[in-house]
Image 1 (cartoon, helix red, strand yellow):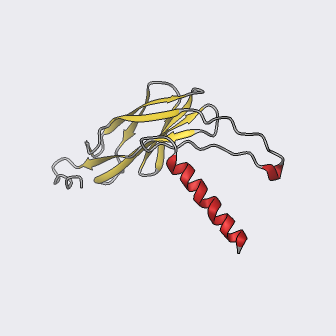
Image 2: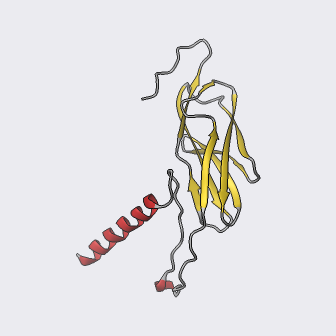
Image 3: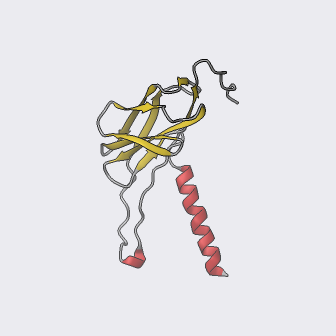
Amino acid sequence: MHQHLAVAVIFVSIALVISGCGGGGSSVIQNGGDPQNGDDEPDPPPPSVSLVITSPNESAYIEEGSVQTISADASASAGVDRVEFIVDGAPIGTDSSAPYSWSWNTTGYSVGSHAITVTVYDRSVPAYSTSRSVNVYVVSLGGPPPPPPI
């Protein structure tokens, strides 16, 4: 029974570290030393990784079949390795040089709400930070407007 309790405490501890790191919805993930595998070296301090989606704005209306530029400001203490652009949880592109942006072709996306997130990866892997979601609406020309944001 004590073994199960220890496992539960480890999972809770990991969840708190992930959700408590950074601000603005960002997380920094870092591998720990593993004494069972002979790795008792302390980890270096996590790098500073920050990210903000600058375009499009929250609740923006985007015409169905159009191309929307997604832009982000990103920085990392060891330098930015890459910035990954994600729509509805699926990666759509990567940019490895500033200014960071990706052209999102909305063809094939349903009319309605879509969540955009962006992840920046620090050169000192495995540190990364993911932005908060920006929710946008793909709309059809001539169709009814989407419902207002809740």
